Length: 408
Image 1: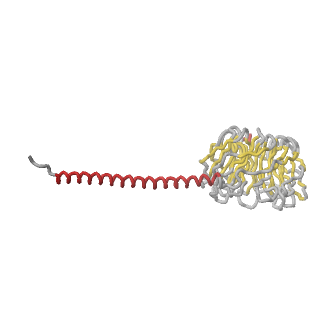
Image 2: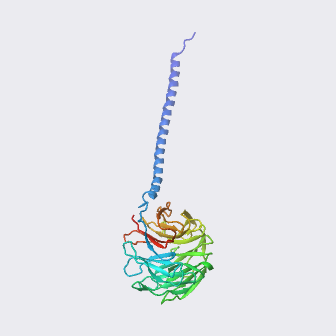
Image 3: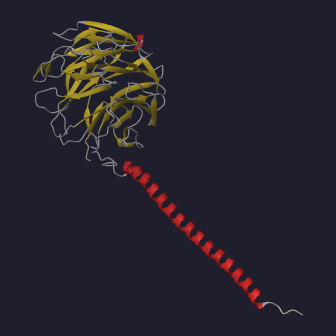
C-alpha cells in the first residue's frame, strides 16, 4: 500500500490558504477603497449642497432689515375720495410735499412737509370738476414744480402753474381723448420741451401732447390703445436714449409697449398678457441688469404681474404675486437700502399696504403688510423726514392721507 504524500497535501493546503488570503486581502482593500470613495462623495455632496444653501440664505437672511420696520401711520384729513396723490417740492423750502386729488369735490389738497416726516393740514386749491389723476413736474422750466391733473369727464388735462409762495394759477386746460384717466410726462423727441402722454379709457387711445412752451403745446398725436386703457408709464425700454411708454389695457388683460422711433413718433404697440384686469402700473430696473422692467396690478385677480425686460424691450417672462382683493396702485422703491427695488401696493378693499422685498434677482419674497386705514386708492414713496430711508404715503376711502415712516 502506498503511503500518502504529506508534502503534497501540505502544499495543496498552503496554496488554498494563500488563495483565500489573497481573496480576503483584496476584499478588504476593495471595501476600504469603496469606503474612501463613499466618504469623498459624501463630503463633495455636502459641500455642493452648502453652496446652494448659501445662495438661498443670502436671499432670506442677508437682505437688510427683514422684516421691515415702519412707524404706525399718521393720518391727515383729505377731501372726498382722495383718488390720486403725488410728491414733489411745491414751495421753496426743499422739503417734500404731497398733493392729493380729491376726486369728488372741486379741490386738490396740498400737504406741505416739515422735513421731520410731519405735514401741514391740507391747503386746498380749486379745480374745475372731478379728476382721476395728479402728478407734479416743472412744466415751464422756471425751477418751480407745477401740478398736472386729469379731468376725465371734460376730456381734458389741466396744468396749475406754480407762482411761488404756495400760490398756483387757475387750471389751464388742454383737450385730449374720451375719458382720460392717467398721464405721464417726458421729452419724447428730445428737443428740451416736455411732452405729456395721456391714456383715454373710453375710446381706446393714447394722446401725446408735444412741446409745452409758453403755456401751450405745439401739436398732438393719437395712437390706438387697448380697451379700457387705464394707466401709462414712460421708460427707455431698449436703452437707445429715447423714451418709450407702456399702458395697461384693463379689459384686454394685456399691457401694450410703444417703442420710440427716435423722432418722438411711436411704432405700433406690442402686447403682452398679464392677469385679469390690469390697472396700476410702474416701471424700474428690478434685477439690476440696466434694463427697465414692468410691474402692474391686476384688479380682477388680486395679484401683481412682474414682467422682466430681456434687454431688447421684450417682456416674455412674467411672474405673478398674489395680494388681497382689488389692488389699484403700485409703487417701486428700495425700502431697505440693498440697491434692489422693492414693490409696494395696496387694495381698495382692506386696510393694509403690501410690501414685496426683492430677493436681489428680480424675484420677490412673500409679502409683508402694514396696517393702514381702510380702502386704499393710491400709494407713493419718498424720504419725507430726510433720514435717507424711503417712506410710504397713501390715500384711503376714510378721506385720509396716511404717512408711514421707514425705521429700518
